Image (cartoon, rainbow over all chains, first blue to last red; front, side, top):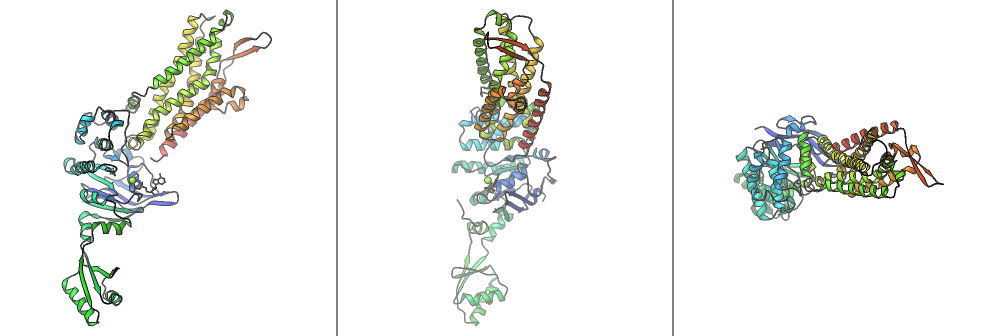
Length: 304
Length: 250
Ligand SMILES: Nc1ncnc2c1ncn2[C@@H]1O[C@H](COP(=O)(O)OP(=O)(O)O)[C@@H](O)[C@H]1O
Ligand SMILES: [Mg+2]
């Protein structure tokens, strides 16, 4: 599988602080890549660098397998649609006029306007001034602008931010339909785990500028089932016993959290503990929720 | 490029920018009518000289206001709708800058032509003495444009770089007033101030006889070094504004 976006050591300093640090983003073709992280983690900054709107302090970016530089940047971006932070629009013009501006500048067929208006279901509001649009309608207009050239890659930065639940649902369904319908690869950022969970096929989690997780969503879910919690009459001795036998552990309240293991292995541990006069009083299968993992990875509570 | 300019035109839809130019021209017309109304036939014989002296003076404040308003109106919609971050993924930032300059220039040209029409129209209606000084009027148009476009590009740079349009508007007004009073500055200082160049490039001088309280206008030599200097200013300001805009992260 080839990568549509690949960054290497991508970093950005504002003042003396690295707001994005050594990010190696890999977005495979055809994926819906969920770029997840709490507010201020560096999502927008990373996406802006990919679009050439902000200059990386260090690192390389390749889009469609080509290293991006200032010369080929716009040529590359012909196949990229974007919506960064908030939708861009001219409030005093109608939705159709707004799209006409971006369609003309992109040099794509005029009929694309009608088509994208239909895709985002704004065809009945196209003659209304955008200043009279609701936030959800503006957001959909922003998506329509991004879709105008039927790009191979779509970069959507928090496209559901500020929408009501119905609007979020609608936007999600729209985004979800794009890869099959138009063969697009979609990068969508969010600070909401639930959203990425419902939308993405692949996940990158960013925390304080660093990419702390990047793999398939399925893999992330698997993490949540892999733990056992045990409680003994003497956890301190048990800790050193586990360490001696090469079993990773983690203390949590009265429990020791250990990886999921085969029954035979667990039986041996319990036998050995018994021989050392340490009573094993609880063995529980712990299902860490996705939220717990997100919390561990990002150090912030999940906002739902 | 033509697409980018065309889209600048579309963006001005309903923004009433020509109305601003028209209102300023009306002010200029009223003022010219008032200034000429208390002149006797003797003064009217010098009517062309009178206008070619007074119009540049009035321009010190009129044109900077037009430039500030036009530049601000062309840029405020971009800041308000945060459109630069989308535009700059489609066309080069330099082209956005150039398209705005070209379309903004059209308004400045319109204003300068409007003034010329006022002068010529009043000259014919009031039967100014002597032949129409066509070459001096052409010179007026040229000098007015050179100075106005330099002031305009300064305004455009600030309007595109700073989201709060109160900043360029204030700068424009302050500049205009400084230009108005720059007549009293020493020449060297005058030539460092953009807004004083309407006066620097004036083609007419004035004598005022304190005893008879009569004014006498006369043709002066054109200040070619002043023209050279303002052209240098134009190139510098355009270049700096463009670099800053291109480098600016959105
Ligand atoms: N232009 C800028 N100048 C200085 N700091 C910035 C700038 N843009 C973003 N930052 C800082 O960088 C960090 C990451 O911001 P951002 O990428 O917008 O985060 P996210 O999109 O994940 O919420 C934040 O702490 C923010 O304050
Ligand atoms: Mg953001």
